[in-house]
Length: 70
Image (cartoon, rainbow, N blue to C red; front, side):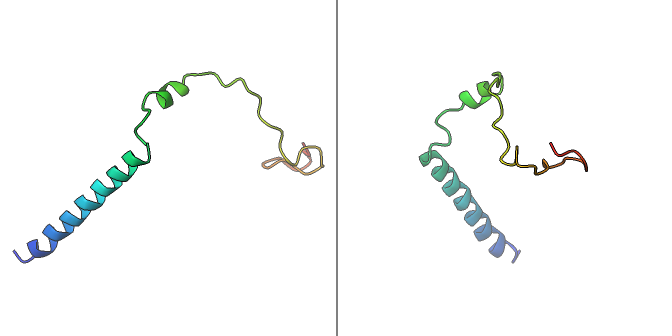
């Protein structure tokens, strides 16, 4: 029974933290646009990747095997 003296205030603190995090997220605009991120995954990404910084300097690519200067 004495454990309730610890668990009830602890649960109230956790609820206050959760409500505070939710209010913070709403004020920061985290829930403004819920549809666009779901649609973005369906689009094609035809843009070419930018060249690596080490390209053309004789430095090996990350993950390149020995003798594969890239």
